[in-house]
Length: 238
Image 1 (cartoon, rainbow, N blue to C red):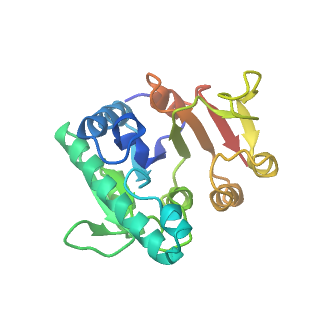
Image 2 (cartoon, rainbow, N blue to C red):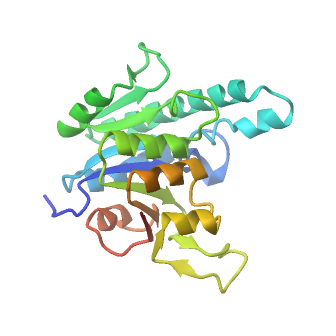
């Protein structure tokens, strides 16, 4: 077991990570690649929970833009996250990582209902727990779900897994002089509107003093380095 600064972590993944070349749909090989990276962290002795988005299957704003009722569009997005959760569970189980899916929307023939104490017990027994269905409520993003679940399970760190190596003061793809932050406060993320997560998730983490690290998931050993407390990506602190 490796000495970890953050033993219990919740990883927030985008649904697009499961699609091939940022297209819609699910690519099983991408799921296996994600699972392999999570297994490396798992083998250090870390306790892991995951929230994954559903943007590779459905984006609620698309429906809203053509007049769909927002709660209906949001519920469809929640169902998409459950599908992604099952795919990732299957990939993790295939490589020997015991995994459970819990959903905020009741579907007992598919997955366990979200029960906080049961989730914590799974984690204590060395199982990876994937939280599907968002918060179970419309008008909430999976960012908010990730923040809420991280607080509820007493995680030591919330990891926002992305394709960029941290938080910048402007878009580094458009501005070659964009400044990267190694460390930043939640209040500054809000005031500068840096778009790390939605404002509800940021405010929740700030209020409950939950540290968050934004990193490039695809960098070698970035998850392990983050759990060890090494300087990787950007850490956001209260």
